[in-house]
Length: 177
View 1 (tube, one colour):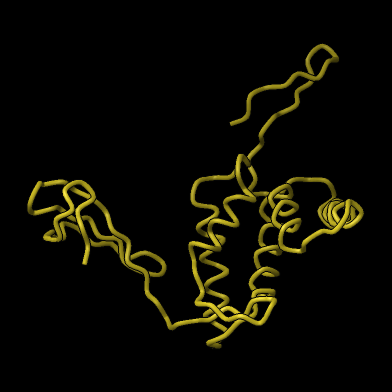
View 2 (cartoon, rainbow, N blue to C red):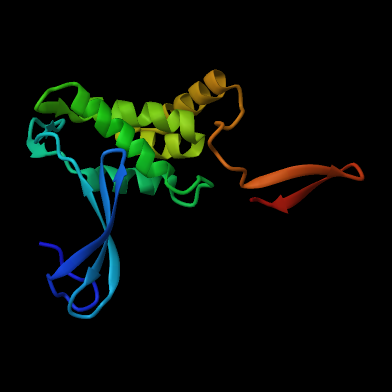
């Protein structure tokens, strides 16, 4: 049952449908007020349960994963849709395993791997919560690992926050893109 976001009526007609990678995007018009809105329908392969560190099992929740990744990427110069693509990739890997239960550590490891390729700061933020750093040396080790493996260059997908240019022998900061 889809409700109009303006009047709450459940009667609507589909104006346009388009395929997405893992579902359908539909443009709708409310029959009561005439408001137009978009819905996205995702294909739900099967119910997957996440096994938590303490042994509890809970249904996989895309929104919970998105929230954690968004917090790690907050105020980072990433292109629009990058986080959704990251979650789509992780979800795809989860469903491809064919298992109905998956450990939260497997999901976390996949997210960390993708964030390391995407944005170094977001990687450290997510890792600090996920790996539960107990002291500063654990965090320093994670930072050192990034510096060694990535040769101090930001990932290709990461937009520049500040650009440094040489002007009359002085470094000058310019506003990023």
